Image (cartoon, rainbow, N blue to C red):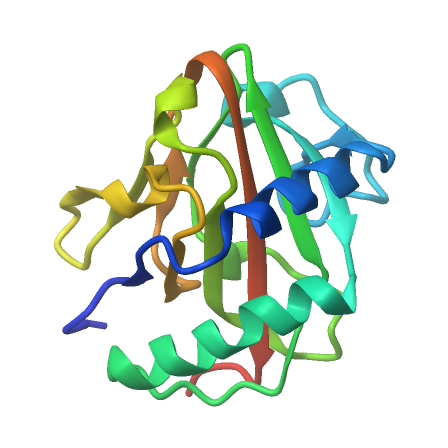
Length: 191
């Protein structure tokens, strides 16, 4: 599918104290190793670290959802995607440190237990400024295979929304810590 817009960004739109509060709240929760896809039943495989190295916390807090949902709606409309969706998954808080990364993947490749619904739109929110870590670039591939570094993903409090079928990655973090939120909207499979 050829898209007019591969992502839709809202720069520095979330309050900085919101970002700090999310980090503080997530750090009080139990972290787990980020897995590839929906492998909860299969367990963690050391080879997974080649593709993904991160720690995550699942969040389902209404105060976080209230801040994020309007951005999905506006991005979907403003970018001209107009995807039908009806729900979302829990929000993933992700910590990348010490070579933390997530190689090329598409969020639609995951099979969430959502009664036939698929991920339609993905959202990522940087919770710290890019000056606090090295590496950790967020990169999307367009329909022609060209790599696009999303500079807004290094700006604390920005929101980046993109179709979940696009390949994307986070390059290795070589110094510091990169914290982010990820949320996925769900809908019926594309025809």
